[in-house]
Image 1 (cartoon, each protein chain N blue to C red):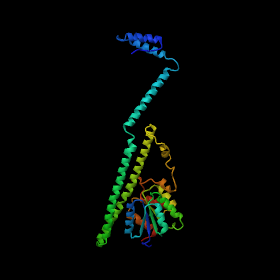
Image 2: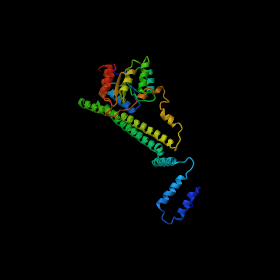
Image 3: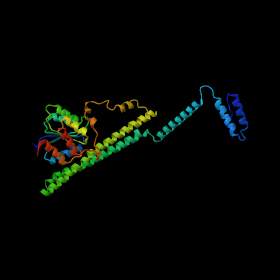
Image 4: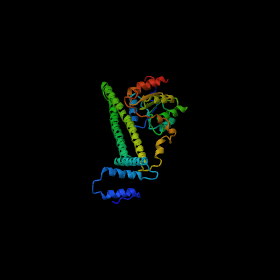
Length: 126
Length: 220
């Protein structure tokens, strides 16, 4: 896998964006863009080729779940791995995300090892 | 005070009582007067009605006292002062933790950039320590979401108190009840996923990552 592939992280908390960006950097992924809601993430996704989306769920005006559905409904974007990183940990949340086509699901608060495991699950060892 | 009645028999009795008011009145006489009063009642009024009126008067008194009790806690202050103050305080907590977390992250990023200058063994240890700080800073996001839930609860209390005030006639917000009973009235396509927003679960209820993984795997 190409560690220089562009990754889009989406969260309405700047702090969380910084945390994920730094953890990705420590894992060797340095080409990271940020968006603070689903709508602006969708615009970025349609303007640039990304290798991975890591998104929060609870955002306004467009939630992470809707962003996921939009991505999966777009022929040019539907192949992009999509990892949900959220504090929503109810079974129905996981089921809804899975039905919408999520690639993996990380519950907050999470650690670097969990993030690494999910990236390995998506891309294989790196 | 002059006793007045249209019943001549009763008038005579009252006159005699009034004449003798400086002397001791036997209980039997008082009883007789009371019986005369009751027997003099005409029209649709009965003893049952009197009991009903008495109970209505007690209810009116109870409602009056309830209103005074509610007024004593100054319910108008709840939506106008206490709730906004509490939400402001909570938002200040979120803001303060965000600033503090930002400062911690600034320092971590500086340390991270300097780690490469350390000997290999120290480099690994320093990098692990920085990673743990990054992980610990997750708290700010989760704390923020928990506080948001509390703010929403306060806003719900605000709505309910306002409705109560409306019921007691203190204020009049015409559309309040309708808005409160139909919160999804303005739902649009951007609300997809919001119906599943519960926020962070309490530690004893939140699923572990391993449980999330198991659910995901079961759906494959």
